[in-house]
Image (cartoon, rainbow, N blue to C red; front, side, top):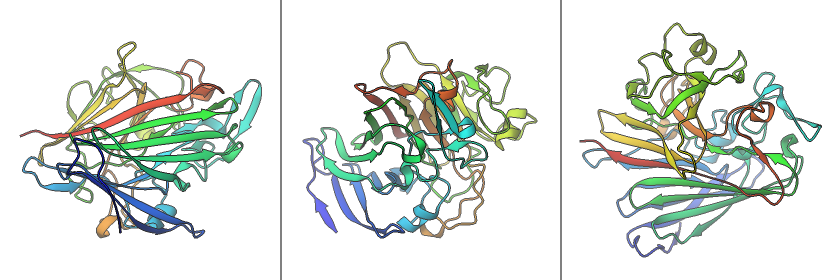
Length: 367
């Protein structure tokens, strides 16, 4: 194992270590970077897919547990279909009919989700080996990952240069900063697909977690889970999480949208102050451990997903199984199918522009 010198004046007790995480199916070596802060919280990230493999934070008694789902080695991620912890792109979420039009030209993508394109296609950013380097950071430990998505990759136009910086801060937050530039007009929508269980990965379902989402509207979907274009008010629907509500309180209600998603698998339209930087998107509390997670973002939407397609058949970390609804996702994003929805916030990136978004997962405890 290679130990890299701690960086940052405030992080004398923090460290970053690097070790082998195995090889990809085609033989490329893959590394695992373990970032530890001065409190003993820890995040492990592999340069395969830019994936968050583990995230260990304390409960109210100081006990550290891993709160994200994942695998023990790169083989699990190479074979897995659930995008555990990965950076997803070039377009996170779904694009209807696997095509879109830019400047009169139709771009055709792989259909890897029924008739639609999901999370960048067959070999999205979650299957790429990223270039990694550690960075100095004044408030914690940072890892920079970069990747060149070539013109035409998975059908998308433009050479897209992508940089993602993960920082584990000394106040127990995981900050993710996404940047990208292109040499040809394109679309881009990046997110992280971590699955959370604040009681600890492999510890049962998440239906009792209390969730608040700062959203007055959501984007209802059709049978292919593609937004209809409507922005629907959450009032008197199961999607009203403006006050803390158990994730499972209404998940089995007789509601058409819940039936289409098999539970929650929907984009919520965040209530964002005009001109703000990061603002609070969601807050989750797990009562038995006291763990609290807040999601702060510059993005206009968040995909709330309740692990409806998990089936418990494949072994996760330490032999844990992950059955249906054993985790939730809060994927910050622009809206699904935005390239085909002119009323949605634009996902177009032009040459000379810089795509830049920030999302922070802040961890604390309630006594």
